[in-house]
Image: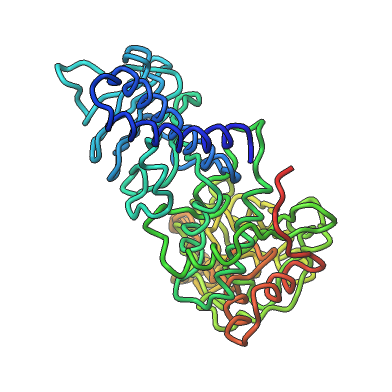
Length: 456
């Protein structure tokens, strides 16, 4: 137990007992009782702060924008960082709403969108919205979370900071409070516990590995990191998956692994070195069992308008040719041939431009036939003049420029996502077969160990 925890643990029972005795003695001890109440409140807050800091925290970038609207949930919030407010803070009652706007490089704060008397509550460079001690003590038992942002509820604290021409809303949340939402956002909560637990361990490991004191946040709340939709994504099954694996992480050689995952591999996962710069020893291609996935096989029709938008610099695409593939069959490099030029792209670039589910894909021409469309239009032949005739030859009919219709292509692919690491639909299939979450994790992350996390 740390010093702060020890002091708080000793002080709180002492002052509670003292206040009980003071109440029996009467008004003579009123001043001392008031002092004791103040000290008790500080000690309770110290306990709450220590409880909040006793496990790792994750800083999640929720949203960015010039204006943010935040509401207190069912418990009060302290809004701190206001230069004009007494003590630099204002207490928000349950349900109170504030609007934060970037004005002249500072954050302007208004209550309910319009402050009383038409004046803002205050402004500052960094604004914090934090649950009071009573809210912290409730922990994950709060069904509505601590604050609401963009119609979603979240636990923990919210930091709003200026980043260039936008505000960044960053959620500081305890790791084990963060994970039930991630599991529910990344996987159907109705899936077997073994799959949900594998997802919990992977998400925990990934989040811890991403923490960096040199950056303003650790992870994003989107597929750019791992999806985090707030309290509404939590269910009893996702909370159980997190609680039953509490503190467990994947390690390789004494280090946290890069525990990446994706929806469906399409039959085979990818080597990390075939997609990214580094080939990690535990992120190797393995056969997958994701045949039950609805995106195991897919088709995507690419109309001329979409192709022109994707490859505007060459006027669209008449054909896409695969130049090379990885060992798992994913596109490594492709050539796009358009009306006014040619592009050579990586598989990742091609996927991004076309919005493909994966790079495990090939392309077919579904019409029109570009070659036949380039033939000149037929018309009546121009006959030579009769022998001895002095009549001039007739002018050839004017020919309109040939309009070559843009073709429609069909992308025929397998899987969904980058294909590296754990296949979520594969984890589902293995769980259905009776495999436990340790076996699922070791199948996709070869040579790794499942261990309790010890903060450095």
